Length: 197
Image (cartoon, rainbow, N blue to C red; front, side, top):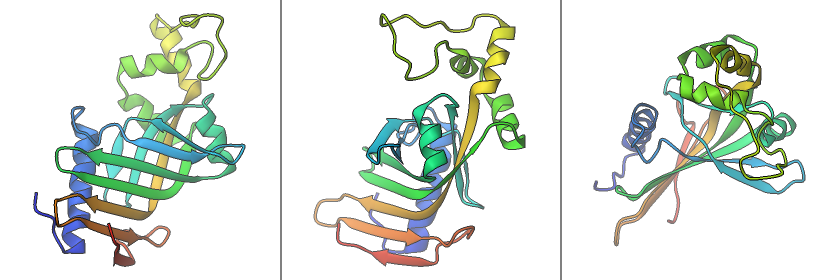
């Protein structure tokens, strides 16, 4: 892909890639890195699965377990970042925004209902994510439909609403870097600024 020099075209390209990241499990944007601020103030990162993207808000959705550290971290500080990289296209997309965690509302209910059985199994794991184990495999996964359904209590949908999108295209002799900033709740960016790559 030749690097476009039109911010509107770049935003359209970002949204197209994010949409593909939701629909195509083979897409390089399907599994971004989520960054949060740890309770001790240090940055934390982990790979997550992009479950939904809505270009109209804009808003991205991932899923997590209520017992995971990221839920407590986002409750203390809702700032979050998502980092995507498409190696084949040499495109990096960095999203900075605010996250909201949903557990007992219609957003979480719809996300749970849309999840595959294999994904739901993870939320019934005992003990929960991050618990100390006596041996590598010393945890249990639910096997019955009833036990899997009980994991719903641990399921959380996390929505990330961008405040900034940063796009970096690496091309020999023609790198491009663009930062798009959003006002809270705005559908379109309020500013577009070129940066040195």
